[in-house]
Image 1: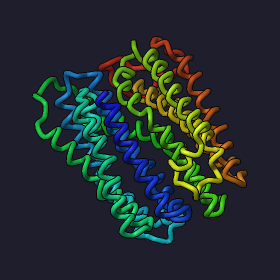
Image 2: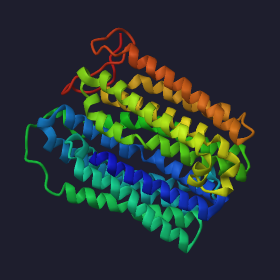
Image 3: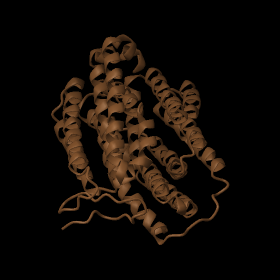
Image 4: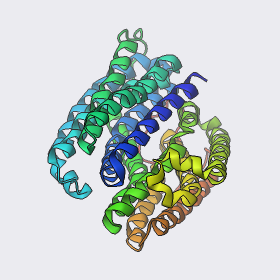
Length: 413
């Protein structure tokens, strides 16, 4: 309940800020801001990969918690500095892809990515140790400061630069919360060569490859929209994505709570399908609400400026539900270190980029993206069912490690 409430506060605050930005910036500037936030979400896969690495290893080998904590914080600091520098170097490319005409705005991505990456290592330790209260405080620290600081910035100067600068300043708050929670390390326990710096870097890298595929998939459509639709239509599509992201992140607490259990081969399949059921129920209720209360839903995504997509908001909610189910299946892949399934996500990503070029309107792009995501969901469910038996080890199967087993590429042959 603590995690559910905290993540609810985080999501409400995050999307309240999104609504504020959509209203104050208008479709044209908000489209640029939404695209930048999409880029930031993709960059943040390193943060989530660090969190998954720490949580899985601590849950699987609790006797090594002190060693893992020390190493993952070291890796997290190295990654945060490296990613911040990389984003700064790539600022001209981001400026070109998002069509900002503002290099300084694109450069802000670097100063938000660095602290959020380190936060992932901190959150992973707390998640793996099941220290729910300080983890909840980190989640609340992500959303509430963004709403307060970001709103103040946008009220002061309603531009995409000010909106993103508010996000940058707020990003340092959860890092401070994590530092306070972890300032007293655990007592030294057992030491294992499986948890070396290089081993954690390797797992984090593979987790990043998987998560970047998912986050690219769930955010690439706004970039497609800005390149195949005019600025107003792309802004309307970005407004619809407010609903998508709300439904996508609404059941995120399910992923956080289920992930440590999914790292245990004996409970992984049962946990996965129970969690999928919860996600489906939440998504169905949200989609029905968006259909019946479409007038209220359009207020949620930005108001009268977005009234032309009012009748399609329930479909955007359905798209968010599908993506939320895909996300849960992706985390099941991470928990089992079943790395080959990520190829399906990359195929879906390429498909969205390809078929998206055929779209001539908001409605057409939305339906094309939904069709691709449904196909991916069906494929991942088939994979999960096919490999639900942890003893499967035939050619081409996805290996499922048991707790404490060293991770590595799935064996073949």
